[in-house]
Image: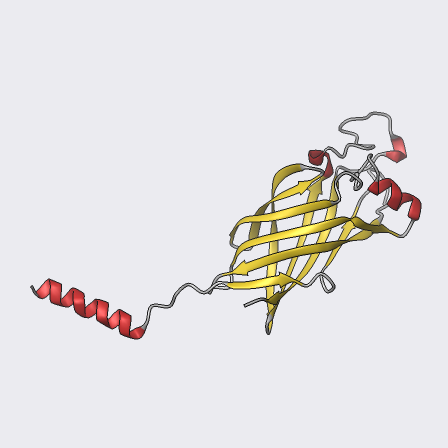
Length: 190
């Protein structure tokens, strides 16, 4: 009887002080403020062309501990930009991102451990797990998510001038890894 009474008192005390429901904060990606900057690298030398790609849409959800619980980012590959028009057209073509057939890329968050995020990146219809460190900063009703990724283009079928697939390329060889600097802004939706 004493145990039952003690249990009831504990339940009443916890109820009176209030269990907080796990609050989810949802953010819609601000596509105008967000930016993705890519940099490719020659296999030899210092040539490193760069450019930008726009975010098309996305959502990020966070729990009451300010940890990302879900995210889905859609990248508009048709907005791939490089200052040299000839290079931009080549990157948009079948040798690289084939944007006529694959106008979008997508990242789906699958988890986080410490500051390392994991997710599924889909490029040209091919999906691979990636992980990378990220930081999340709060600015009032907005969040800013920053990350620097290294992506192996050959995993997504982009083999053009890769020394892993072609020999004797000399100065035309391109590294398999390209860098993606991510700066995403989200506006609180709820």
